[in-house]
Length: 420
Ligand SMILES: Nc1nc2c(ncn2[C@@H]2O[C@H](COP(=O)(O)OP(=O)(O)OP(=O)(O)O)[C@@H](O)[C@H]2O)c(=O)[nH]1
Ligand SMILES: [Mg+2]
Image 1 (cartoon, protein in one colour):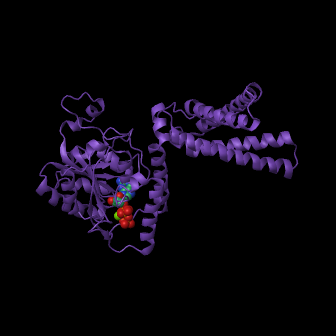
Image 2 (cartoon, rainbow, N blue to C red; image 1 turned 135 degrees about the vertical axis):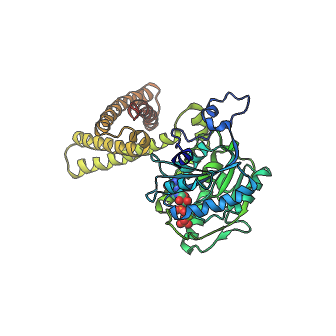
């Protein structure tokens, strides 16, 4: 028994969030070859992301299997991707594999979050078409057949929508409706191309052709995986099918304010990556988003420096030089903390001991000091040598030193030297 279940327990992929291509007979694509299970591709893989859905999963799997057994016998797989739920949904789903041979389970222990769960599932999937559906029966399974039909008729992406004919929400509160529409409107302003291409960009129920997303590095934040697929995928044709979003019968919602924050973060990231700056950055292999964060932190440091200078010099009257030293050092502390917690957060998390943190802080101080010397040098060259206006010369010197500081910090300070 255990062996049958073990066969259905898939390893969670790690590393880059990138769906492999299906190998073509003549292909020498190393990335595709890595995914050995892709030697035997199937027609369709549906991801069911779960977190504490033990009470829903059996009904969900039963309904989906019944539908798909008729139209795609043995040519589909259902893949439950569970983030180590406290209610042990994964274990329960694994028991179900004895009755549902097309069911697979992936247990993730080192990562959390809906969007990455879906992508990790697609990375292990064998389907030429891949998709996602909620586990809590809010997405009616029968709509799946219409979505599949749309893909078979040529769509690259088929989205189940609450806002086309036949769609709706069963009994959402007025507040939730307003929030959902408000988020959509805001998205339209920040990312019009993506948000206007479908009526329900927030939908978590859709299918996509593997070839439209394969080989593309994905980088979502939060819940809205569809934004990522439209924003980064090679999607030419989109179809929509109406559906009514059902009320949850059992289990708890995981939606909190954090999802709204993540949504904004995701929009901003897609905006930067898809804009001219992002394209330029990719060509030059320059991390534009990180640099923008670094520049914002620099700006906050300037405000801290000026404010504290006023406090020490005007308020405490401790002399200009001493005031400038204290204010400057505290601004460096401010910048370091923001950069460590925000700009380079992903890299800092990989080197999380106190000693490593202290080392980074000391190096950051040295780099800032070198930056200051470089700034004075540049200012002199631009002002005395090229005779630029003093303020323009100062601005240019700051811009160049910021870029230099960023590059040195990225390459020498937050660089991961030890991989855990
Ligand atoms: N693997 C994984 N699944 C998740 C995570 N968060 C949510 N899910 C699953 O994603 C699906 C959608 O989550 P819900 O909390 O139902 O979100 P929702 O449907 O927008 O909100 P409600 O209407 O309140 O249910 C469900 O199947 C959840 O179990 C997560 O962090 N990891
Ligand atoms: Mg739900």
